[in-house]
Image (tube, rainbow, N blue to C red; front, side, top):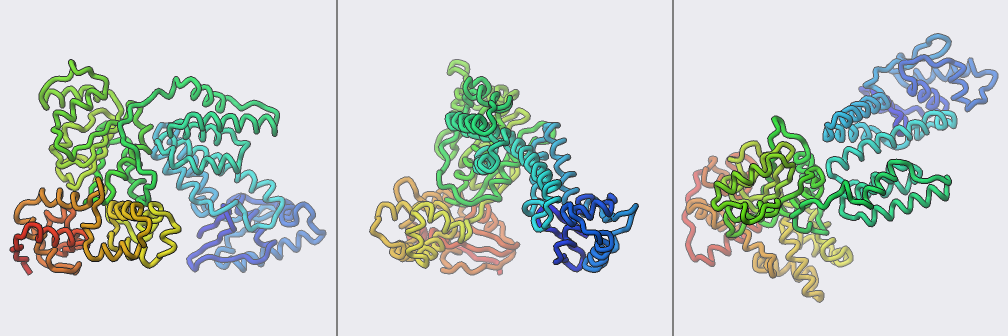
Length: 570
């Protein structure tokens, strides 16, 4: 059985949800639910049901209401018991949303006090998810709203403050900003929301906006209440002014994309994983893998900025896709950590040992972009407890101990259209909806392909979307190259890493001319193509070449002029 008062009245049993149409019966049920498991006197119920003006017949009428309510509730009606000159609704705490909320909130508060911040954030999120709207939303009782609903609204706001405190400690200040702006507008009298907004702006690198927020709340408090801000707001104000508790952190991350779109599930998984403590004090290692142009670097930067404040000793960044050797990368990172050139030894082994020693007592996030192999990544991982590494790669890094792998798939059609609209403007998409759909379908959910299309349309404002969609149909990869944005280069880099047998198999599958599913016995050669993200494998022994990879394979054969020779086992 399930009862709910955190929103419209909710009664649900094995047969489904039940409704209580009569207003007086809803008030009666709500009054019993607020004190579920406790007797409520008939006099008190009469005061609530008739809002302090019970009629002379209140006693008999109340008994009639109880009888009808029992009938409406079906089997659950037996839970309303006559007790001590009043009535009691028998319900276990787990059956009432108010009690479940209180239990989760109390556990979240305990976890926050114990510095188990990820657990606290999760518990408080679950607690607040039980609210379906304002408490007792459809119960027409001034007395209940005055005495209970207003109190419960305060309890909910207290839980929101706790949850936001946990989110800020986890470095999720960017995600919290919009919510805090709404909360300070809706509840300008709650100083803690203002202090949290100032902290979020400060962590987001906008201290002057934080100071502006302080001036706004100070003026509001003076005008409305004639008081100065309380200690928490004043402390936040002084901290931002002095900068004593907010030194400039080492942050080598490149700028993140302003039009980043989608990936909510993967982003939340990454940020929670990076911020969570690893058992035995080992650093967290997250690997973000996917095919060419799928958006690995953009997602890694987004996640890095969101969790950066969880790593008080800074964020290091290295791009590993070029020709720079590991020794040179280590030298650059050691210099970033404050070592003078004279203190950095020659040789990869000596630099690796020094790098690990320097990071042993520091809490840092290391972002390694476009890694080629686990052997390349190993010397660059942090060693200290409380540190973490985020690696992007086209390899699955199966040989990297303790790594948690997140694989990026192509964007779905709605997210692809949303990204295109952000890149070229919603008006242009709205003018040609069918052409926009054709365009995103030919880009096959690959964000880089959509960005190249947007760059081409920006360079040719007279082009229609339909014209570019037709050009993509004729020679897709030739069109998906402009300046530094080059999807062909990404596929070429993946292809060059293949062994000869895998390269021949890829060309053979690409020449089939369709995206039809290939069924054969599980093949080690084809599995290597899946690992390289040039094939997908929806089930064992089932292989598919996605449209852009197939176009690359067919163009590649023409460029190499080498006939593919491969035999697939049926």
